Image (cartoon, rainbow over all chains, first blue to last red; front, side, top):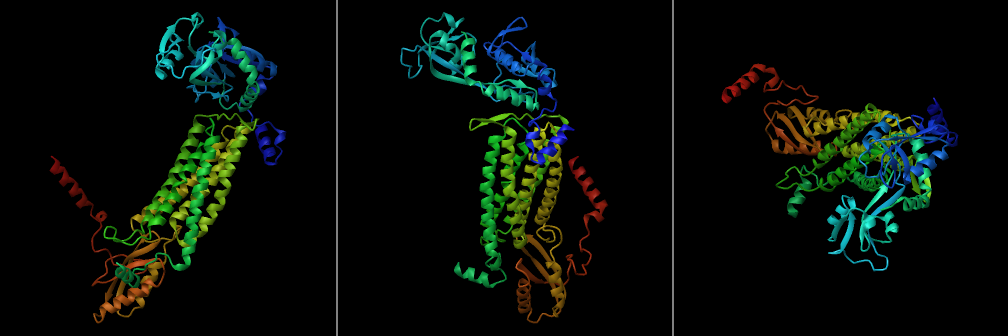
Length: 233
Length: 358
C-alpha cells in the first residue's frame, strides 16, 4: 500500500515525500532501534575472533560504528562463508563481513556494497634503498602458503623465500599486503595485486544497502587508519 | 561495356531502381540510419557504464545492441542493391533488401523472446535486484536515478527516429526500414519498462520491472513474428504484399486487368515475386494471332513496366495454355497434382526407401 502511495507521489513529482530506494522486506526499518544480525567469519585483519566472539578487526569496528548510528544492538553469528551467505540470502541475517572482495563468487546470492577500501599486495622494500628496477634474482620473503608467495613466483623472477612469520624477517624485501609494511619498516615497492573490499547485504534490500554504502563511503581516512592499526604481520 | 549499359537503359530493365522523385527520400533514410547507428552506440556505452550489479537494465542494454542489426542490414543492402547484374548475379542485387529484412525481422523476434524469458525467470526465481549508490562529482547518488537518466537518453530519440523512419518506409515501400522503425519502437518501449522497473525497485516493488517487461516483450514478439513471416514469404517468392505486410500488393490484379483489355490476348496471367524494393517475374499470355507477335510482346512489356515503378524486370511470354494460378484470373486447376492429393504415392515412396535400406 505504501508502495502504491509512493508511486503516486513519485508521479506527482513529490519525491521528497517518500524514501527512495525502499526495502521490499523492510530491513532498515527493522534494524533501526532494533537488532542488526551480522554474520562473521574469521579473516585477519578484517574480522578476528576468540571462539565465536569478535575481538577486533576493521570490519567489526566499522559495523559497531554503523550500528551505533542506527541505534541498533549487534547480534554476531559466526560461521563459514557459504553458510553465512545462504542464511543472508534467506533473510536470517542482515549483513555478512569477513574480508569479502568485489571478486567474490557469491554475486548471485548476495548484494555487495560499492568497494569501500582498496588494498594492495606489494613487494615492500627498505625505505633507504632505491627501489629495484626489476626483481630478477632478488631474494624476496613471503609467508608460506600465502597468495603473495604464489603471485611473487608467477609474476616476477624474484628468488622467493618462504617464511613462517613475516615478523622474523630482519632485512630485505618482503611480499605482503600494503597495510602491514608500516610494522615491518618497509616502503611500498612493485605491486602484485589489488583487492577491493566489500560487505554483503541481502539482495534487493536497497534502503539498507544505500544507508550502509553512504556510511562507508564517507569514511575513507578513518578506514585507512583502522587498517594500518589492525594490520599486523 | 558502355554499349551494354545504354541498351539496358532502353530495354525493359531500367537503370535506376527508384524513381527520381524518391531518390532524396532514400538519401534521407540512409542519413537517418547512420544517425541511428551513432546514437545507439553511444547509448550502448552509457548503459554499460551504469549497469552495475543490477539485472534490471540488462534487457534494455542487450536490446540496444540487437537494435544495431537492422540499421546495419539497411545500410549494407542500400550500398549494394543498385549494382548492375553480372554473370555471377544475373538478377542483380535487389534481393539484398530481402536478406536484410530477414535479419532485421529476426533480430526483433529474438529480442522479444530474450526479454520474455529473462523476465519470466526473474519472476520465477523471485530475484530481488540490488541497486546501491554511485559517487558522481563527489556526491553519493542512488544508482537508480542515474539508470533512469541513461534510460531516458536511450528512449527519447528512439521515439522520433522510429516515427521518421515509418514515414520514409511508407514512401519508399522499404521493408527493412519498416522493421527498423518497429525496432525503435521496441527500443523506447523496453526502456520505458526498465524505467518503471527501476522506479518500482526504488519503492520496494522488486517484481515491477519483470512484469512491465513481460507485457512489452509480448508486443515485440508479435511484431517480430509478423515480420519474420513476411520476410520468409518474400524469400519463398510469395505473392507480393505491401511493405507493412498488411495486405496484398494490388499490382498483380492490375496487370491481369490490363491483359484482359488487350485484344490480341485470349488469356493472360502475371506471376510476380518481390526482390527487395522491386517486383520481377513473368507475364504469360495466350495470343490469338502470331502476326507481329514480337512487336506486340515488346509493346505490351513496355506498357506494363510503365504501370508502376516497382515493376522492374519482367518478361512477357507467349504460351499455348496458362497453368499458373494468378489472382484475378480464372486460374485453371494445376496441371500437376499436388503431393497432398496422393497420399498413397508418398507412402509407397517411403516403403521403397525402406526396402533399399534393408
